Structure formats: structure tokens, C-alpha cells
Amino acid sequence: MLPGQSKGEVQAALRRDCREGMSNRALPCQYGVTWSTLNKDLASAWPQPRTTTASTRDLRSGIRSRR
Image (cartoon, rainbow, N blue to C red):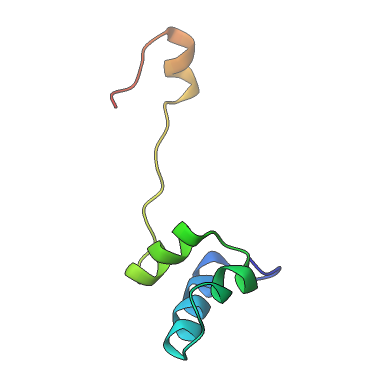
């Protein structure tokens, strides 16, 4: 990601440059993202939801979260 850009701005720039004809190999190099991130961003205009992790209190008490 370029400094000073949010994730949403980078995703929009990736989609815009792809529409303008930039190659899929050049896009990750220019924006500093991985190939899999590029494919996810081009597949959907909405970012993936954040994953949730077990809370610290659950870990301390020995209870495992459902997976």
C-alpha cells in the first residue's frame, strides 16, 4: 500500500487501473499488495469482513471459542 492511502482508496485505485488496462502482474508491484489481495479486491467492491478471535478472558479461563 502506498503511504497515506487507506485500504478503500487502494482497492478503488486497483479496480480503476485494471479497467484502464494495466496488467495483473504490474498492479501488485505498483501498490505493494499480494496477488491474492488483488484477486479479492477485483472480485468485489466490498472488502471482506474482519475475522473475530477469542477474547482474552475466554483464553485465560481455558474456554475455547467455537470455530
